[in-house]
Image 1 (cartoon, rainbow, N blue to C red):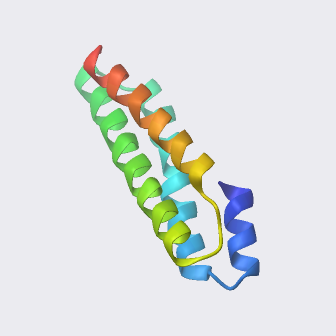
Image 2: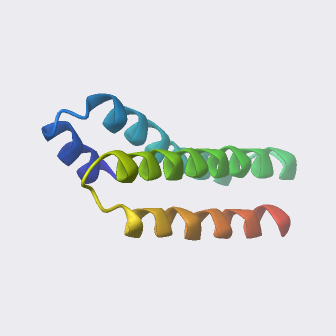
Length: 93
């Protein structure tokens, strides 16, 4: 995600790049925080936040694809796969 946003910034897509970088990097930060959860409820809550950030990241990628010449299909598919994994983790916790 970091490298993709750098490419967007080179094309003067600063706002979209910033939004994408913020939500995209927040996924990992929340997953890491979940690993240090003090309870099952805390663990699931952090994964829930990560899931929301992944969904937001998917939104920004869809918007970028719709408004530019960038092909984001691979990144969108990776977001969807991450979201499925996180849903499974939440349900099975």
